[in-house]
Image 1 (cartoon, rainbow, N blue to C red):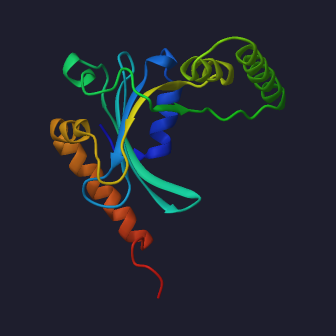
Image 2 (image 1 turned 90 degrees about the vertical axis):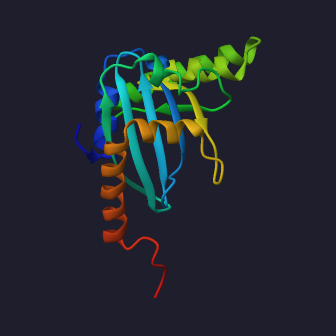
Length: 183
């Protein structure tokens, strides 16, 4: 397990050949400072932990790591199966022809949903398939002051790595002068 830039960790995650709809996530405000914790799990692709903060309204900074290669029952039980919240990771499209194909698939998906009885979950999943999202699924996220208990349980389970991620993120925050205000 090594600490890397959070975007590099996400690149690894989206390059996995895994069923995109089997991902699950837990996220919340960090317990010890600014920013957020995010855990992502997939039964065949493993468990990932990201710690991020908003450097400014347009730029996110952070660190992360892959904690385990396979998910066991104890870890899996910490993640939501069915909740109102959803997350998705989008893989950027760079080729113009692919953009056109994805646009057509999304338009057709929306047309089908306009004409048929559907649920918001069905629409979400169909749009994720249309855009080719490499990871999406249920998300347990709570705002400020209401951190999911599962975050703390996972932090205890992987205490050593959580501490290393915390130290690295705090170093980044300090180096950037975040939290000092103007003056």
